[in-house]
Image 1 (tube, one colour):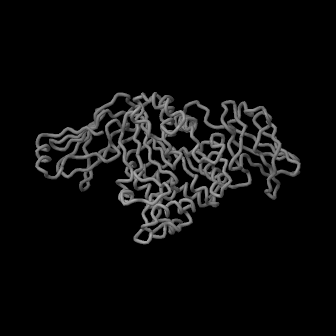
Image 2: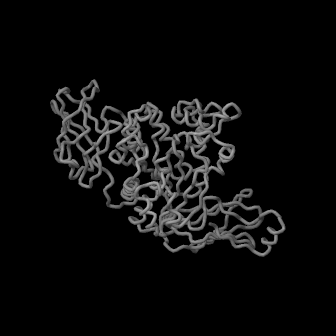
Image 3: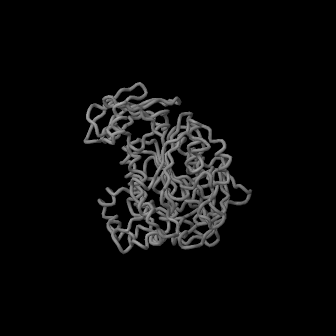
Amino acid sequence: MKAHTFCTTLLLLAASGLAWAAPQFDRVYGSHMVLPQGKAVPISGTTDASGEIVVRFDGQTVPATRTGNKWKAELKPMKANKTGQKLTVTQGKDTVELDDVLIGEVWLASGQSNMLWRLNQTPEGKNAIQKADNAQIRILHNEPQVHTNPAAYKDADRAKLTKDQFYTGQWAVNSPQSAPRMSAIAYHFANVLQKELDVPVGIIHSSLGGSEMAAWIPDSILKKKPFYSSCRGNKWLESPLISPWARGRAKQNIAQTLSSGEPMHPYKPGFLYSSGIEWIAPLPVNGIIWYQGETDAEAQDMKQNATLLRDLITSWRQAFGNAELPFVMVQLPRINDKSAVRAYWPEFRAVQDGIAATMPNVASVTTIDLGSTNSNVHPPSKTEVGTRLAHTAAARFYGKDLPYSGPAMEQKAAAGASLTIRMKHADGMKTTDGQAPRGFEIAGKDKKFHPATAVIEGNTVKLTAPQVQNPVHARYAWATFLEPNLVNKDNLPAVPFSTALGQPK
């Protein structure tokens, strides 16, 4: 909550019903927030009054520039500070204050329902909520005001489908009161990262169940690239970039209004970016965690999904003013579901890893062992997912000596009837049950794969199959569901791969 100090004149103006004139902060700023350390930080807002505007924080006094009713000042890079300070903006006799502002690391968490899944929905949530007493963690949880449950929207729902009303939220100190509805993965990520870095951590959350990537891409990209031409105007629901599942759910929600005007829905391309990301962009976050793909994976088109994911990452980096902003995504886990909507999860995992391999500062975190053993698309436990994300961020972007990857294919070598796969991150490679590694397949030039017998030899796995006398390709965990048992000494699971695929372009 923002704390405001007003002069007597303003109080009289307010009482008389005259226009409010005091400077205001933009929506992303609030009491109890964290400002990012080590980089210039813009502070911005609006005002209806005339006169010079000055921002004060952390010993700095910075005059703001003005364009119309918008003002902006830029704080010089600051060191982390665990002690809350006041951030003030003054115009003439009017001063507006934010209380208890820390300096540290700020991360954005986004995606679809597995990121939205609340701490109080998880089996470990009750205990985590009781222990939510680390005031060095600050939370900005943006609560969707309309969901995409299988029911028709009412007038009250449709009224909230605007970029300014779809999400509500404000900064809060981590506590048993603020934590319960927070994204469980985002919460555990922030908790682990704060302990590893020993600086304040702010975590901002904006996500929505069932959302496809196109909804999170800004209009500026949708309008410019021919690839997105089908997303424009009233026909967006028929776009091949909208998965059949998302299309069907959207039509359920807005069936009554489909025949009149433009069909507005949270899944409309660009909507979730404008409502859930665009207003956050003035704050130069330190990184992004992303858990999404269950919807887009329905499309059997690796090139399409690679384009969507690459454009999403690139456009968000442009918005936040950092071409190499860290982006850490959760690779789709396993799911014991043979329905068509899940059939292409292996291909989508490959898209995620391909993007991570070809874009700077992008990481894909393996969770093949953490998914459901049934058809539940929402694995209930989120602690380990958040921990792996935090360890990956701490190791990759903060130089911490932490294990963050299981065995990953580095090189293949054929020798007669066998194919050997050399692994990185493979020290102490073993199986969790003492049995031979499961999930390997090999193929010849025809790319017809057969189950392979796998033998661990140090940091390599030797593969053979009686049906393949001259193996050329190998793949691992290439299935919607499996029970993997190959790990390294840190018990991190081996990374799915296929040598029969090039990197998606």
